Each structure stands twice: as structure tokens, then as C-alpha cells.
Length: 136
Image (cartoon, rainbow, N blue to C red; front, top):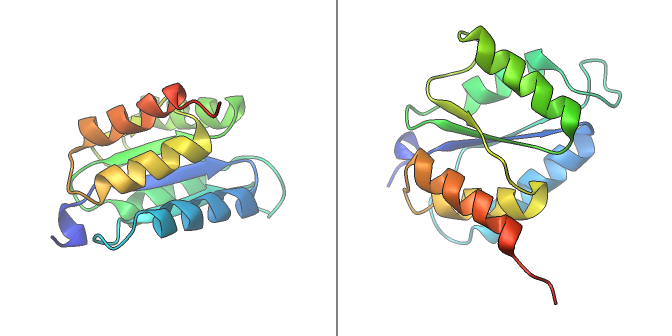
């Protein structure tokens, strides 16, 4: 399966380093399947902490292969930024979904599931199910 058929994943964090590290971890744990298009959109445009609608829109465009884009965020204002972009309607590829999932576990679940060729709904469901992962 080519990456042209895979759901793209965007990881939005207030920190560029955190977004890039979670992307690297998720891709590394996806194993030997096809390379899922994953982009990190971290930090403010000037390199500091924060979120940038421009970075998020560019990341979404870079991973769009026509199968949809799943966006996972770390904290509240990142959620608000993505919601604002979705409300504008023309800034993000269609379909793009903001996924309610834990950032690290959800990212891993989303990338692993996308690597199987699953559709956007299945990728979203897998990431959301990560809330139920127990560590004890």
C-alpha cells in the first residue's frame, strides 16, 4: 500500500521539540508497515512556546494524501487553534478531524492504525480508545 492511500496525522504541541519527538516515537513504533505521513506542528512561528495556525495548516497540507487528516493536540489553546481553523473551512484539507485523544498514546495508536490502511474513522477511534489504556 502506498502512502497515497493513508490517513495523514498532524501532531500539535506548544513545543516544537515535543511535537517532533512524539512524531518520531509514533513512527518508530508503527513497525515495518507503510510510512504514514506524519507532521509535527509545534511551537509558535518564532520558535517559542505556543501554537501557530500557519504551522498547523502547513503541516496538514503536507500530510494530506486524500484519505483524510487526523489532528491530535496537547493542551487547551492548541485545541482552540485547530477548532478555529476547522470553523474557517478553507484552511485545512477535507476531511480533517480534531481527534479527542491523549497526545502520546493517541498519536501512537493513530499512526499504527493508519499504517494498516484504515480509514479516518478507524484512525480516530483507535486514538480515542487510548484513553482506556491502563498502566497498572
